[in-house]
Image 1 (tube, rainbow, N blue to C red):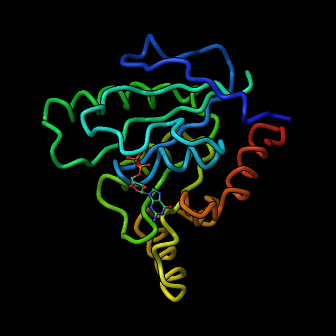
Image 2: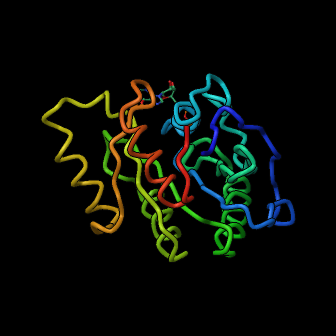
Image 3: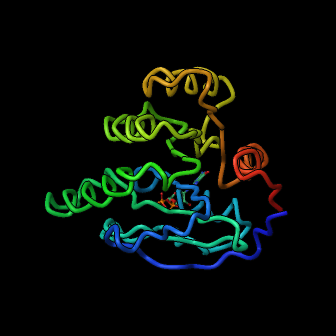
Length: 199
Ligand code: GDP
C-alpha cells in the first residue's frame, strides 16, 4: 500500500545530473501551462497547494521531483506553450525535456495532460510524440471535464484521440481536478503500473 499522504518535495532539477536515478519508478506529468497540472497533482494527492497552482509562467526550466512514500517519484515537467516565454527560455525548456526523455529508463508511466475542451495543440502533439518514442506506457488525462456539456464529452474525447493519434492501447481518462472526476481511474493506472494500491 502506497500512502499518498507521505508526499515530500525532493528537488527542482535544472539539468540531467539532477535527475534521480536510484531505480525508484518515476511517474511523469506533462501539459501545457494552465492545463491544470498542479491542480491534477494536488487532487491526486488530496492536497491543497502541494504543487503550486497558478505558477508564474516564468518557471519553465525546472523539473520538480516529489517522492511519494519512498515508493515512487512524481515528476512534474514544466508546462509548455505559454505565449509570453522568450525564445531563449523555450530553447532551454526543450533541452531540459529532451534530456529527460533521452533516457527512457527514467519513465515508468507517463501522464500527459490535455484540456478536455480543446483540440490538442501542435505542442501537445509534439509532447505526445515524445511519450510514444519512449516506448513506455502512458495515459492521456483530459482535464477540466466539468467545463463541458454532457453532449460535448464524447466528441471531444474522440477529437483528442484522433489529433494525438493514439490508439486504444493508450487510456484516455476524462478528469476534473475541480470535482475529482477521474481520480479513481488515474489512481488505478498508477497502481497497475507500480504494482501496489495507492491510498
Ligand atoms: P498548471 O499551470 O497546468 O499547473 O495549471 P493550474 O493547476 O495552476 O490551473 C490553472 C487554472 O485552471 C487555475 O485557475 C485552476 O483553478 C483551473 N483548473 C485546473 N483544473 C481545473 C478543472 O478540472 N476544472 C476547472 N473548472 N478549472 C480547473
